[in-house]
Length: 427
Image 1 (cartoon, rainbow, N blue to C red):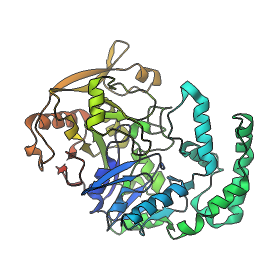
Image 2: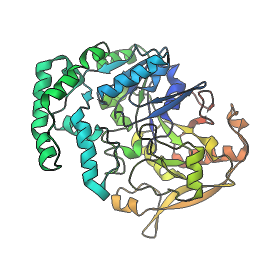
Image 3: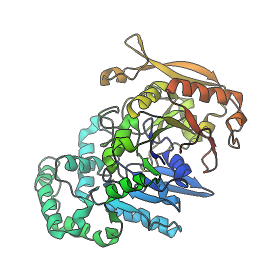
Image 4: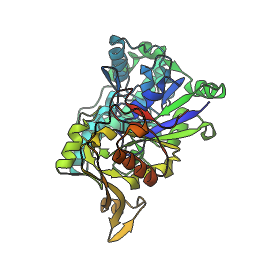
């Protein structure tokens, strides 16, 4: 049985929650392997809409065990609030498992995130202000606090003291902010120990054993390929690795155990936050995509920037992730356009470029080269098979597949759980 990675093939917000939920009834474990509550997944089940931020989407599938891997940074207050909200709606959250090696987002991380972003002014990155970057920075600097530290007060206090010795100097002398009290932070963090204790496990051992025993494990990335700290549009990226390689380090499973890598593609392109976006539309078409597509960030509440489909980005995602399949989402949003442009290449300094430029400067100056495809006006939300789609919609999907470099194995034709056309099985 397979181990699968499911990730965003653009700048995030592609509809990964819907794709994970589609597979949720067929898998034994769904694992978040990176990011924190700066990601957001929306899942529609019947007439119920769920907005998930930190929890794996598999928590909505009764037979599935959701796992927060070691590569995730966890804000314990947000996690407990999210669990409580689902409990109140009758969702069973008792199966959740959290890696003891996952790092914690503390109050001083969120404080530093917000003040440093304001300090950057026009050079700001566009972070969510939720402490994600500072928490990952502490992890790399080896002054981070892990989930397991909640259960040893002596170690916890030593680590908080070590972190705040430096951070309080920065807050006071650079940002003119009040120093953060060590005792207050320690007391707050210790308060999360008992509520979280029953969820904590050696998830790396558990997941490897599950795969060896033939169980199906789905690794779910947050954000998207172009937000990867190594392979994205740096510096306008997240602080972790949403790409397929991040699943191995963020969950502790070797690459030889991964069978398939599924990229989620929106039928157009969106982006939240600052940074280059070659196909961005600052006109009526952009506003129409935003309105029909409901393009507002699940976590941030910010309007998403909208543009036409970018095949250059899709090819890049196929390459750096080793994608075996695509799940195309929100095809229904394009219904009603007479003609639909698709970016097939860029013009940079008068030259045609068909692959994503490695140079940040070149990408900033890239201008889209479009091919225009005929649109359709028929309602596609009731389509159950590919052949039931209008001919022009079929042509659009086939063209995107040819340009992107991997087969499109599923198509989202509406927001509902059952509004999906399955072409090829992922399992």
